[in-house]
Amino acid sequence: MTNFVRMKMMFISIIASLALSTCGTGRSQAAAVASVDSFVELDTENLADEPKAVVEWDKTVHDFGDVSVSDGPLTCSFTLTNKGTEAIAIFEVVSSCGCTGVDSPKSKIEPGQSATISATYKNEDGPTAFDKTLTVYISGIRRPVILRLRGVVHPKKQSLSQLYSPERLGDLGLKTRQFKTGPLKQGLSVSETANVANLGKKPLNVTFTDVSEQLKVSVSPNPIPAGKTAQIAFTVTSDPSLYGLNVYKATPVLDGVPAAGSIEVAAWTQENFALWSKEAIEKGAIPAFDMSTFSFNSARATKNITVTFPCTNKGGSTFHIYKADTDSQAISVTDLPDIGPKAKGKLVFTLDTTLLPEGDNVIMISLTTNSPQRPLINLFVAGAISPDL
Image (cartoon, rainbow, N blue to C red; front, side):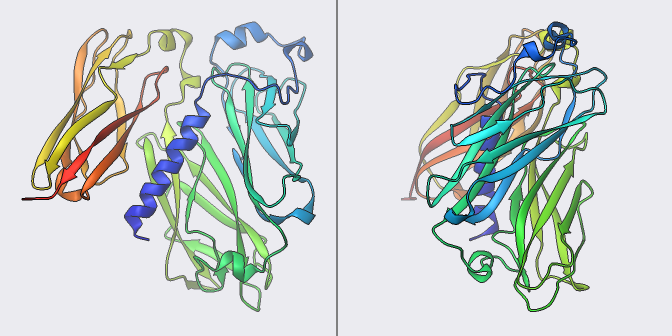
């Protein structure tokens, strides 16, 4: 599999995760854990109106990795820290299905304090891959936070070599060298973990070199005992100059010897509207596009096509696009102007048809913006490429 194909798959996967994390506030009946009545001392009305809360999570995804039916219920925890200046409360935690139980803190969380949400996947569905979500409603945060539990349940236990050989680097067993985090907000960091294995016959000490500036990565336990698994932990810290999809790298050093390959961690950085005032959010840009899909008809693979998306900013402040990401090298940015309040403009891209295969093509362009209502916008370019005559 080529690096381009790998990155396209990662791009699509991250976009799907972001879409899930920024969806509406529809609530399942599965598991309402706490209500506002539990917090009699907290000024929840004002907190709900003002987006003052700043919350940092130790992770937003817990990967149980490979387990078996015989392992029984699987439990994990998510820890949040109140980085703001006022107390916050967890109003409610809603599970995506009855197969996941939740235990949530029922008291207010003061500035600087941390709290933990525990979740248990019952593991009663037999051999299957699972990806469950917890929707967390927190005072002072306008959008719910999405936490995920995932893993693969096997009929019986499998050997480490069966599970971790596909992308191994020396004795370090990996299922993949490409990892991704949950959404990353400006001013915060995001952390995730994954499982790795020592496929050798002696303890393996793992350190890292050539690590991207915004990335921290470690392995625990370290050294990894022979024939055992460990967790590799990633933390990506936001950079004010970086938005949208960014890939951070690190090269494992195994017993003092750099591995013949690196690992990659992809994170999508968005604006942190929790740091904005209520007035700034109310006056925020509201982009409205004339169309979400640009169609081209049977273009021959010998010419470029100008792709234009007209846009009207219906908001009270300037619409700005921090970054445009695409899942195809055939699209390049020509012009992404700022669009003033109540003004019209257009986004212009260039489609190099020589880089597309013959037949039908659909390309996604993802815009990371300063619009509180539309922080992530997906546009599409679709059409067919016919052979040269």
